[in-house]
Length: 466
Image (cartoon, rainbow, N blue to C red):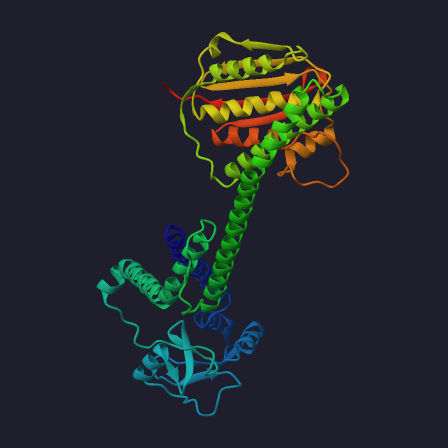
């Protein structure tokens, strides 16, 4: 609705601005046209010049100068001189039309001064006591003969002009609004429908009016989006159900394999080689079980099926617990852990799920052990900056190549494989770390460890107020 009114205001503003610009341009054109017209020799000025171009001879006759002849030719006019008192024409130009009378009464002179002689528009000028009459072509001028105006009308003309302009503008706006109301009524649902598409609303625009074609296109787009959304959700649900089913079905066989492998590993009657093979089976089965659990957790987090039970959690306690569990499992001491907690970070309270946060830190530590079987040092640092907590876990192991790091940052799915890689790779466990951190409103960054070697995971969250 907001955008619709903005569109209407834009239309009205454009209309008013266009009218103002057109009015100014018309005034400029009118002034320039009338100015150029007044700069030429008008009828009254030509009559004045004609009076000066006549000169009297000693015998009482008159002669017209060369300038006067050129003036008549330029104006396409004829001229005559009426004697004072008698009203007789005592001189006229050679091109005087035959129907023009050669005697004039006072009323005739008054009429010719104000208007026409035989439909010829006339202008006059005094020459001494006599009168010069200049007759112009019939289509040269139009004369307003009854040029009297009410004084109050002239005095109030500025107000009248402004009032007329205002009324005209108002009428134009009203006519514009009425004439475009159908378009506005058609535009509003179109705009609302377009705004609703990216928000996932159930959009339907009535297919009528001036923009019915656009309404049809929007409805088709909305229907296609709904179909695609339904198909995508159906696919995601099927994928999640399949992963959950496989995870459930594989749990029992894996437990049996792990149980029998453990029994064979502990059986002193078997050769050492057989017991070692049983140990490998047990360890790899455990890894398979962890991968299946990770895959199941990833699926739940991806499709928002895993509830995040947020409660106030002390991040320091979670980190210490994860580090202690990892150290207790490192019986051979190949992965010494250095834990550094700054003074300000002794208590970092976060609204979160303790189990999921614990799982995220464990996944990082497990990733270090998997990719560095010969051992390495692990550095865990917890810092606090105002309302933000930052956790860094890095190692000095073999690290990660630029290609692998780029793939880890940009490839969304661990299971996508091009068939060119073998062995261990950073993937699903770290993807789950990213999901857990982002589910708690945080951010995660993967990179190289100290000095460009090793692997580093940096996470930071906004702390809650307690």
